[in-house]
Image (tube, rainbow, N blue to C red; front, side, top):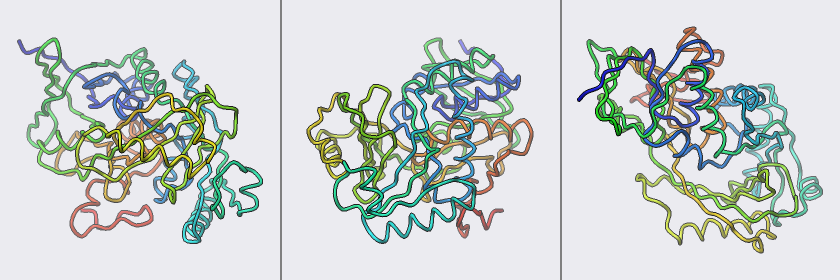
Amino acid sequence: MLQKNAAPIVIVGAGIVGSSMAFFLAKRGIKPLLVEKSTAGFEASSRAAGGVRAQCRDISAERKLAMQSIEVWKNLSRDVGADLEYIQGGTLRLAATEERLTELTAQSAEELADGLYVEMWDRDELYRRKPFLAAGFIGAKYCPTDGVANPRLVTPAIAAAAERLGATVWDYTQVTGVDVTDGRIAAVRARNGDGERLVETPLVVHAAGPWTPELSRDLGFEIPIVPSRTIIGRTEALPSMFTEFISSHDAGVYARPDARGCLHIGAVGRPIGDFEEASDDDIRAYLDKRVDLIPALGEAAIEEVWTGMLAMTPDRAPVIGPVEHLEGYLLAAGFSGHGFALGPGVGQVVSELILDGAPSVPLDAFHLARFAEGATFEKGRFQGMG
């Protein structure tokens, strides 16, 4: 038997982005329905690297969004009533080539102009501060206000806080379709252990990560999101070496500490176009890269390994905002590995868009229409929209 419900807003996907939206909407008295095919944060959000950074955001619009998100992160543990193991231990982006160093130096000028404090370290300064690094790096960019949090704690805590404020959370519920009447959202169809559901609603926010294109395709438009596999290993507890999230694009590897004193080692592969899990060979190849960053890690035991999925767009920037010609439908997907850091800020800003009509951080640069033929996307400015 078809069960009928109603909700002022339906959010599809209870990752960190969708759960944060539900939380900020509920804080302002709106009681959304948050629908998740598994459980809150179980998919990509719980398997993230855990970095919370604003530096090295290549698109100026995303940098401002990241800086706003860090302001949210500062008080998030208090606001949701749970320890999220968030610390502002800084991030360090390494350069092994002159080309990379030039890139980081140019970014530092833009970041300082945007109000983000960063420092450039030359080779001597880098190895004076971090003598444990592998040889071959020629400099780095450091941002002290960046940090890390525990992905396994964050999203469930945000979703639970949203529920306490009046949001409804449906776990293990698959959205099967969206009904449209006269060019506007009318209802969401879903299925769970209780049977078929029809939820009447005027507004749907689609935040389903790499799975977003499946439902959007049924609505008649394509979102250029491709799945990409991420691989992360956690070492045994080690003597403290650093507090920063340290990464090298040249070596293709990163490391960051957790609250237990373990180090998380990770790397991201190329977009793969499917949802297959990593093979044992893939895992070994990526984890072997840890010695290219910190040679001493070659002796550290790996206690746990996991994989996850990222939602990659062609320009590595998210798709956020309304879709033309379909009233009442918003997207918040394609974060390209940035969703964990940006999620709380996006939740706040999209709630402002919904309730106030004007977000505190401009979102025009993230419009889906930027991928239309003839559109360009440069320096965070969207051109050719319409």
